Structure formats: structure tokens, C-alpha cells
Amino acid sequence: MSNKIILLFEDKKNQREERLEQIKVADNKVTVLPFRKKPASSEDEEPEVFEIQIEKILNTDYDGKNGIGLIVCDYELSTLDDFNGISGNIISAVAEKMSIPVCFYTAGQNKSTYLMFKRRSWESGTIIIDDKSESFGKECVGIFNGFQIIEKRLQKIKKAKFMTMTPSEILATILDKTGESDQIALYGSGDQGILPEMMPEFENKIDDDVLTQLKERYPRILGNWLYTSILRFPGILVNFIAASSYLDINEGDFKRPEVQLLFEEAKYKGPFSDCYDWWWRRNLDELLMDNNCESGLYYVNKTIKDVRPSICYEGEDHSAGFYCMLSKKPVCKNHSRGAISWFPSGADLSRISKKEHDKIGPFLGLY
Image (cartoon, rainbow, N blue to C red; front, side, top):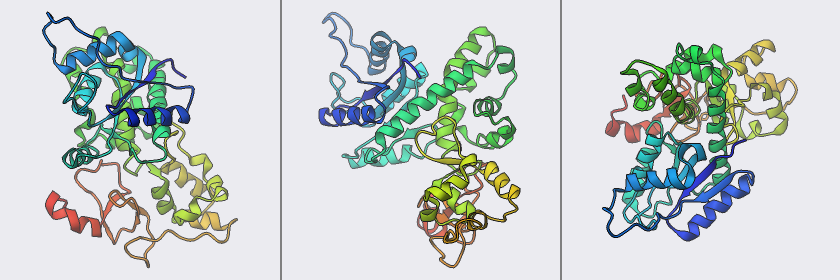
């Protein structure tokens, strides 16, 4: 799909070799390279700060944004060759400046670093990969391919049209779901995550130079928005657990191939769909309406008789319908809280179970 590479930042040799192999096994057509240490400098040269050194290497040795499709980075890089004390924050800053997508992972050897990393995992625009997951390599490749798809489809939007479109309209066009533009826009309401890289350009007149800069930055901006907000928080799209809960189908039964086949036409096939499974909620609704079914369970039971309903994990006598963002389990309305201030406005199927809410709510002001 692309001649660009995945560039891996990992300071420990054994883990570096393991990560490289995981990504190569996931897709041997994608080129993944380890970041090389900086070239030796003259003793007469004034040492430069890490950000400048890293940026120079990325531009000189890897052709910058033209050559790098994704940076995969260990958040803790304290022993990276010739960069002792460097962290993922510096790589993130350089990647943002160069408009290169980046995702992070950490083994969590240092408790304070691990806790900081977990906090970052909830920040908008920060893509986090579970380093212990069996699908680590698959997710890296899926994220890489997703950004390439967005960049390719963005290039097809004509200049005159692009100048008049909002970010939600651009993303809806990329997803070939122009009718979902208003729902996508709800995921930007009150969410500052996508704005910092975008707003400075709008402080000036949108001329050809600014337009070029915007188009260069938009793949990263829109990709981060899609992956960390729209795909993450069930609403317009639903993940596997959220889909089974919404359809009122037990998640174990929802895994069955014959059940999956019944909802195939509602499957999300856009950028990042190589990573995990998602479904378009509107398409699920249309499928049920077309078949005069009040629920997914009723629809499935027309042809498959032994499928069980989805049950709220906090109240076993209640059907679920919603998704707890903390436990990642199906919950019902009575045993969960919605309208959490830091959830996107469009994520109306995303909730926090009462059990989880009671544990953290008073400390975080979740009311």
C-alpha cells in the first residue's frame, strides 16, 4: 500500500528484537526499522537539544514525513543509544511538529512512569498499545495502514471543496459516510484533543501555503481523532462488547461465525479496521428495522435458536445495552452512569458502571 516505513524506538535490545519480529510477522510487506543512534558529531560542535537531534535524524536518515508512516515508541527510553534520559514526551513533540503519527507502549518497569503512562492513555489524541497483547504487531500494522488510507483518501478531496469543509465533514467523506457528519461532529464538542494542531492555522488567512500545511497535518489529526475518540467510545460505532450489548446478544454467542455472518453488512471496514472489529450502529439499526426485529437477539433467534441475551455484569437480572469504559463489560442503564463530562458528546452508549463510579467518582469529580 505504501513505501513508507514503521520506525521503532526501543532502548532495550531484547525487547527491540521482539517488537520488530512481532510487527514483521503481522505483515511482512510492511517495512519496520529500529531507530539508529545519532551520527558522531565533531567535538567542536555545540551539542543540540534532543528534539533537534531527533528531528534531524528523522529528516536525514528516514526522509521525514515522506518516509515514515508511523512511529512506534516505548514511552520510557532512558537508555536509548546516545540519548540518555530521553522519554516518549520528546518523541511525541518531534512527531507532532513533523506531522508523523505515533503510538506508544510501555512494559511498566518503573512504577511512576507506568502510572504517568496510564494517565496519558486517557488523553485524547494519544494512541496506546498494550505491549503484552498477542495482537501487538497486528495493531501496529493496522494503525500504520489506517493512517495511510486516511492520507490517500484525503488527497482525493479537491482543493475548492476542502476549503469549505469542516473536520467532521472531511472525516465523514474519508469514511464514505457523509450522512454521519453531524454525529461525528459531536465527538469534537468539548473535546480539545483535536484542536491544538489545527487552530494555529485558522488564526491566519487560509492561503495555498496554509492549505498545504493543513493537508499535511490532517492525516495525523483525523487519524488520532478517529482512533482515540470515535472508535474508542461507543456511540456512532460500537466495538465487539458494545455491539453484543447493544444487540442484546451474549458476547460468547456473538463470537460464533454463524451469528457474525448475520451482521456482516454493518461491519466497519474503514481505516484501522485491521486492528479490531467495529460495527456501524446506524447500519445495525437499519438491519433490524428491515427485518421487523425489536432486538438483535430476536433477529438471530429467527434462524439460530440457542443464542442467549446480553446480561449486565453488575445486575444479572438486567439486560445490558451499554458499555462500561473502565471495566470494558456490558452494563445496563440502571447499574451505570452516563453523560460523563470527559466522554465525547456523541458517545451515548459509553458509560461507567456504578461499581467503578463509586470507586473513583469522588476523587475525579465524576458527577
